[in-house]
Each structure stands twice: as structure tokens, then as C-alpha cells.
Length: 115
Length: 115
Image 1 (cartoon, rainbow over the protein chains, first blue to last red):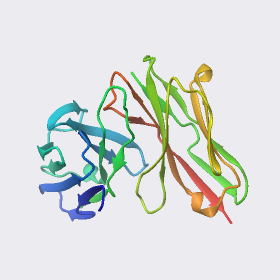
Image 2 (cartoon, one colour; image 1 turned 135 degrees about the vertical axis):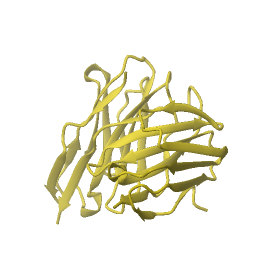
Image 3 (cartoon, rainbow over the protein chains, first blue to last red; image 1 turned 45 degrees about the vertical axis):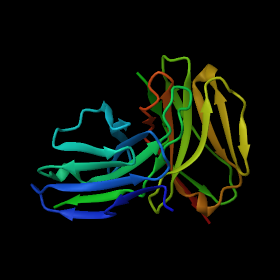
């Protein structure tokens, strides 16, 4: 009964490859996110999806493309992987609403290593 | 713009010492929400607490306590009688009612509790 799940947990790949990370939440939340955590532990928001609509798109390269087939899923596809993409990617979800500002529920993270 | 500053990069204490982790925030919104998250060595991100800008009452939960002071824009976290299991990276975060799907994190404070 995992709340937010991500697959795979580890991803090792060569530069130039295309890869995807999948995320699913079973909490019934309206909003899902992708965060990137670099080697210094800094957490930076990449994307936010509310009811399948993109509402935040931080200045990430367009090689990164989020895909949300439904409210419970938010996948991250990365084209032409670069060394600098190596990081831990966290999916998260929250309950949406102007007065709620609920906490984020995070997935376990996907450690991406680009060789 | 919203910003969270955690000036302490690393803190090391000996078990049973008290330790305070500092968090200073910036926002122009009058309604906002502050959070603390814990990231133990295993890597997951665990929600600890949420406070809204209208509630300056301090909170205590077991050995954990939080001191919210709007006058100094601070939301500090104190661990009393620290234990080795408290060793983790702790993140302070901020979101606002205007933009509650955009949670901004501080850089984190790495706490090491030595036996």
C-alpha cells in the first residue's frame, strides 16, 4: 500500500541515451511533482502537474519532458542524457487547494547515474 | 519571490546534546506555509511539520520542537537530547497561498549525532 512509488530505484546509463522514470500515487492527490536532488543535496522543483495540466515548468532543459496520463501518474522522460543529469529524482504528490498547502508526499527517489 | 535560507551546512553534536537548526525565509505573501522535512541516510524524505503564517504558536512533539517567529522570519527546529537516529539532512521549506504548488526548499542542514 505504498503511497508514492517510483520505478526504477536505480538507473545507470550511457550518455546520449533516452530513459524514463515512472511515478504513481494512490493517495488521490490532485498535484504531482518532480524534484531533482543534486550531489550537494539541494532539492529543486522541476515540474508540477495539477489534474494532468502543467502548472510549473522551471528552467529545465527541454530534454526533460513530463507525461501525465492520468491524475495518479506522472512520468519523466529524459532524452539525450548528459553527465550533469546524474542526480536523485524524486516524485511527490500533494493535495491541491488554495487553503490547504498540504505537505508533499515523496516517493523513494530514483538515483540516475550517467556514464 | 520566495526563498529559504538554512545557513548551517553541517552540525555535529554528541548524543544527548540539544541542537537547533536554523531556518530563515523570505516571501512577500501574507499567507504562507512552512515545513520541515527529514532525509535520513536511507534517502527518503519524511515530512515532520507544517505551520501556517497565522499560527505563531510554538509546537512540541516529543523531543522535537519548533519556534516560529514572524518578526525575524524564522522557523527554527530544536531537537532535545539528540540521538544517533536523528542523524540526517533536515530541510526547511516554504510555499504560499498564492502559489501553493511551488514548494521551495532550503539547502538543508546535515546533522550528525555521535554516540
